[in-house]
Amino acid sequence: MKKIVLAAALSLLATTANAADLRLSSSDVEHNKQIADLYVQNGSGCSGGDQSPALSWSGAPQGTKSFAVTMYDPDAPTGSGWWHWSVLNIPTSVTHLDRNAGQRDGSKLPAGAVQGRTDFARPGYGGACPPAGDKTHHYHFKIWALSVEKLEINTEMSAAQVGYMVRSNSLASAELVPVSTR
Image (cartoon, rainbow, N blue to C red; front, side, top):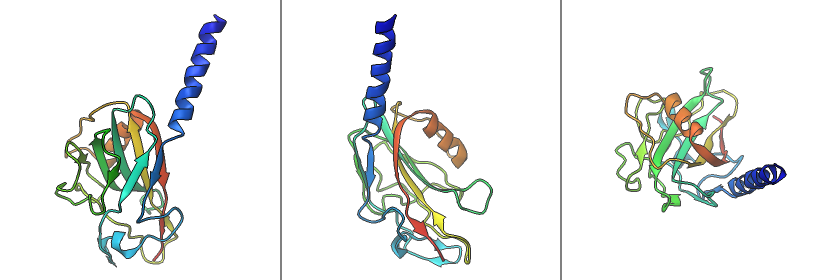
């Protein structure tokens, strides 16, 4: 019995240590720094470039079968935050998304990857644009290592449903949290 408990504990420690190795980085956005205009929405009173930033990741835990990338603003004055972007079914051979990969038509995504519907009621990247005079907003760019190769989503699913599916199949995640004020 002691050997089984010890083996289970060692397995859990190995998984936890491996999950802690997942890292997300970007040459375009920095943790706790103002988002540049190129990545700000063009609409809703903002006049940015509305391009998704370049993102790269490393250190996926053992058992990773695909990746997902999300961008979420918990500070949006909705009572439930705001989903700005989700990219799902990214193959494990892919370790980065180029700048502007989040075009609405999906033409710059890796083969097999799809975008979920955002709170803008469409797929594709929607840049930061906090309401004028509101508090600082924190934009959580997250990489998720998933235990499944493909998440079955459709265009009718809400961003919250997509977020739930990502979380429920997550092995590990890492994030960058740039900010925006206006």
